[in-house]
Length: 87
Image (cartoon, rainbow, N blue to C red; front, side):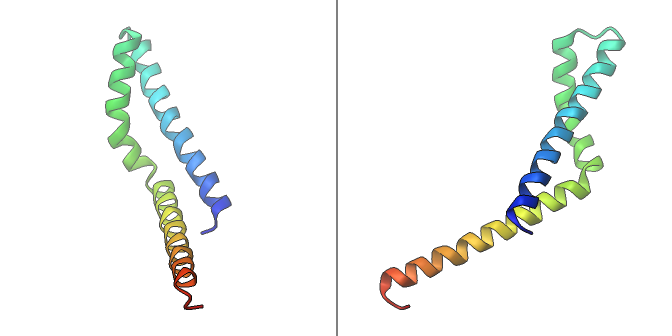
C-alpha cells in the first residue's frame, strides 16, 4: 500500500472515530445527559463500538503502516550497507 493511500485511510479513520464519538455524545445530550458527561461516556463507548464498526478501515490503516515500516526498514538496511562500504 502506498503512502498516499495510507494518509487517506488514516484521515478517514480518524474522522470516523471522531464522528462516532460525536454521534454517541449527541444522542446522550438529547436524552438530557450533561455535555461533559456525555463526551466522557462517548469516548469510553466509542472505543469498542469503533473497533467493531470500523474493522475494515482499521485493517487498511494497519496494512499501510506495516508496508511503510517494511519499506523504511529496507531503506535503513541499504543505507547501513552503504555506510559500511558493501555497495
